[in-house]
Image (cartoon, rainbow, N blue to C red; front, side):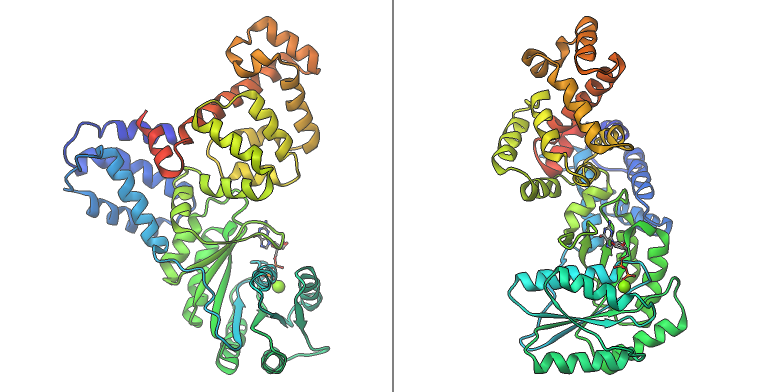
Length: 438
Ligand code: GDP
Ligand code: MG
């Protein structure tokens, strides 16, 4: 994609004004990027029209190149659609706030309830999780397990069959016991059906939750859009939480869901663990959808999970464009934890390749294999991999017990990664644009 964007934007250079003709190629690339990211076709069409309407005839600002300006307009329009005024606040009231979570079965409601309870607890407030999913026999038990893991009380009624009564009793219980936030974990179905919708509508009517949130699975693409539309028609939604954005999903479904519901995206789920809930940032998601990599998120993640000093050093070196195999080796050590690697790589363009290298088989063994090759290099070779000729490659391969091809593969991956990182060193959008200008 980057290559395509780069050459597309190159043709815009030296033009004084954005016109349909000189933008065509660039816009085509953007359109493809969106479709690739799972944004639904109609949304893409609307969006592209919006962008070209905004762009056509705009004088190119003196300080900007036309291609920069077009990227800017695309990014801006994406942020607009995603909710430029996004607001991750749950708008808690001074007394009891009731949040109702709904969505299809498997969307991640129960998990997200737990994650929210954890955040609320961290703010020094008391949450109560309510087991209102009486459809699945194991659902009540699951909520108790989740509640325990986040140190939050769970309200459930043994043998209950009426979720509406359970919710009403739970709210009363909350008022009597100094609870700040009640979170209703409602039932879902595999597909939308009338019975489910009626049950939810009745809870909405009788329990009067302060906020109704839809939980959608970000990996389901077009299905997510259809279910969001149905839920939004039946209930007055206050916001959307999209889960499972830690996988390959680029988040394009978010754009479509936002487009059909018009309600704010509040949080995104980025892991199955209880700490995997992040406030939604439209600007970062816009970059991610366009495939520019969510560098800010990556550094945030890095800061949370890594040795601070090491992160600082790596960042400095990145800024100077001096990323070496030594740095790479250190990073390998730090990310040699299950799950973390994929999470990091998923956030960075170009890194997916490295992810493939590590995928399959024993994760730690892979790390050792890569690390072993680097360890078999001399310090000179590590800071200047170009030194590695055929005979040095043979030596490294022998030293680390791999084939010369494997050494080659590693060097190729490192090379594209280093280039990418240099391009990104400017940070965020600016860095990505630097890359395109080259
Ligand atoms: P519910 O039926 O809507 O209550 O869905 P659950 O909360 O039971 O979640 C269904 C599955 O999705 C479980 O295996 C969760 O661990 C998983 N899940 C939920 N949220 C996320 C997320 O953000 N990322 C990942 N990777 N898995 C998630
Ligand atoms: Mg559930």
